[in-house]
Length: 278
Image (cartoon, rainbow, N blue to C red):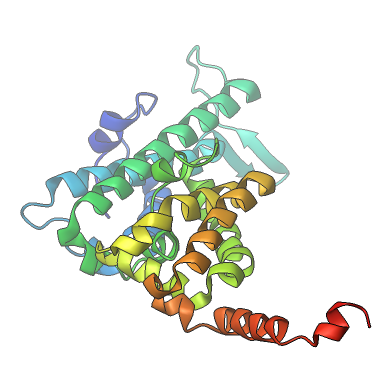
């Protein structure tokens, strides 16, 4: 585990008291697993203590500490008895159990801090290209990078999204549905994949630079429930594609554009008598 002492927890969480790390260890182990499987991947996790990765290690420790504490809060003052659960005795001190309202507020504030810590970690990973090969094995990398928008910070440039980073990750299926069932039937699967591949490599070509902003607006607005504005942005992209098909070879070679040309051909060769209603 990357949090091994009570001091490391206290440095990050003011409400942690006492000197016993053992009461937190089950939650720290679960948080470590969350970090590895969902955020950074096992390959990068294994390199956290390498020289030069100090900032990455600190960001990861922040996430693990806050995730563990968030999960632990509801259980810290409970003990199971033969007749049910009870509150741990204060041992004769003047301490009394906190109200449910105060505990809920602490959980909510810890979740906000956890969301911020995850965002800082992911931003650091995005900005440090040396990590990308190792990071590519992580779920978060796949979720974030199979899209036209890679970070929550960037997503919020295109649409209002007030939920946390954790909720943004959970919303990944919405993002994929918007791409697959709304956007790709207009721009083609082939062009969509080409754009995502270029974004991952950091070499978006000039033609795709023309449409990327409207694609991002369309995606973000569909996900956040603004279909009218989203459709307007997607219509701009469609107009560019049909006006300049040679600049978008993936689209030009797609079934969508082939069907469009076939329809144009049929319209051109309509019997003039049929057109006149004779």
